[in-house]
Length: 351
Image (cartoon, rainbow, N blue to C red):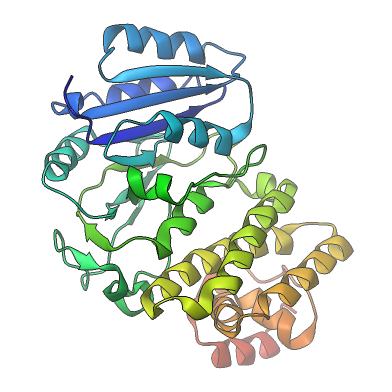
């Protein structure tokens, strides 16, 4: 049997509407170098049936693992335990791959030996229209193998690009650190990205739009109303990451520290967003105060998030919540410096 270069874990729960599109997209010319593990998380629809149909057609590429429901992390844990690929990453069942980009990427992986591999992700709506591209800044050279202590995301302008849609790790690195994602909750893909960051030795980037992220599915965990209901789950993941970071940060090279901070700051933005939307004012304020007390343990993370979030900056200065700014003005303020942000917020007639 041909040696597998890449294992794609496909966590699947009631995804009969999308699973075929996902699996069709991975059937590229280099598919024999690919292992696709469809982890059926106790689906109540035809997801398992569809997965097994593809397994029957492509037994050397696709394999279905049927298990009891345990949420996203349990699926990744199971796939990692059974993965045979040199590299490992996730592909959500409602998303898909750019088939040609995947094919070229597998070609590149034939000669790749880096611990961490970064690619491009594209966000698309239900019509397939491109919403945004998550790519590296021009300062990051394609195909160049960086030493991990030289790949400082903050210096390179990476900002918010360490997400599961662009990050792939060497499988042996994940096993060496005994990576285990939390089970029973969502948003644990952040754990997959975060925990190996201080264990990798080398990084490489390929300018290929491998991952196609579907925006707009009903019930998607990134929808505002879902985020509001599941803020506790996001916090549970964040607390685990921040505790690890706070314990180990004095021992880490600056570049690794920067990259962990990027993940933490992005998670905080996800957390703060539903808090400022929630109609439960006292409850959300208590939650926000609790988060602020935790984040103050690290001056950089505390300042970075405050500088990037206009409503949070205003709350820190005044202790007042407000959702009354028009969306367009919110984004304008978001991009301004903290000093100008304060001046506009004070003079805004919307408060």
